[in-house]
View 1 (spheres, helix red, strand yellow):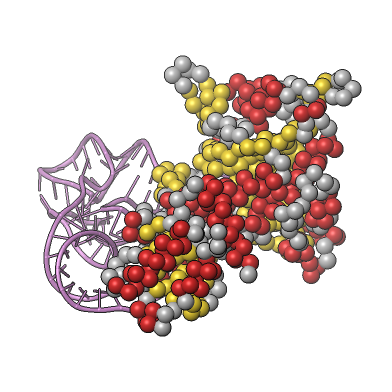
View 2: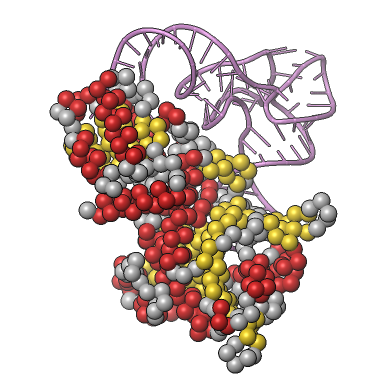
Length: 463
RNA sequence: CGGGGCGUGGCGCAGCCUGGUAGCGCAUCUGCUUUGGGAGCAGAGGGUCGUGUGUUCGAAUCACACCGCCCCGACCA
């Protein structure tokens, strides 16, 4: 059973990260809303507000409430694991940056009013980082002098700020957003291409692990610069960009955990890039029609959740980020940058996975794995069964949310459906008379009757 | 940044046109009853009506200015 494996993996991760997993709803902070706040237009924004995940503090700026924060952390962790697997090295750069680096690359003026500029008490010009190419290049050039240190890929996950003219769609187009950005350094274009491929493959795995189907598409490079770029797009009707692609891209196999990131990844990449896929910015209708048979043509809308760039020596030349090659000659490095919109992914996943009752979290990113619903709080037998289940599941490292509130069953079902916990264990007097609990799957709605032992066996894998 | 709209208890709204001292639903608190898909009854608490200035005997209501937020468009992880 695939979900058993999922639980086992997650359990170990939670333990090693030391995250407090189990929670009683009566002691939790979960401000769910029955009514939809009027400002929210798209479904993910509405559901995030209703499920008590976020609270807007200003246009495009959100506080992440406990439930939302848990999801954000799970997504960040998956991104981290796949980046590490691909050989990238994690670090952390500050949110505030000195303007000097940006003046050096000419981007201080080029970036425009989208960059939030700040003056400190000494009248020094600072900025809240919208991205980190300039800073990472500065760090790189300070320490790396030899081709022997290459390839190198450094990344961090940090809050960014882009002063969008018009923030909207909740966390999908906020001004402040959490982004994972990685930067690769290579001796020449061929080596940089291999770094690019590593990130490309890592991204295929990353989004797939979150239950998302993404398609890499040729894209414009924007103010970051460069000539080779792909956007990773989640198909959704509410997406901001129009996309055009070959339908076969929807069902391409995802590289497994055992993919060799030191090996040749070009076949995996080429398999996809051979087929037409482009966002509207670079779309060429004539080419689309020439390359893709009519029945395979797909025009849709999508949400960009990641982007990979190769930009060559765009930063290394002006910033003099050079290394000495094997021939003793000093050469500017070839760079690439690779972004994943971590906070945007929370919204994108909801857009891709919900129904009329609420969110349907894919298990790997769900804030809790299992909900225990006490149908009759105050009833001695029901309470005892729930307490036992709650204690044993938590002890086994399962992320369990126990609804121990004195409330109507309907209200409890509605809450759990809304916040999208993948599995609901329903404990009530009626079932207990037969020694049975009910296990409901949020995604399929399928209900099973199981004994307490069987429930424990399923969700609390043995040590 | 152009165009449109909205700010009234925590949330959703009415009241504004036609000025007279703020109301409804949900939520919250107390009590009783209830408990397998967002319970019922009874009671209670909570609002400088976005801010400022002006008009008026009197402003949530009229006028002006400002601030904030949302939507459509142009721009963007």
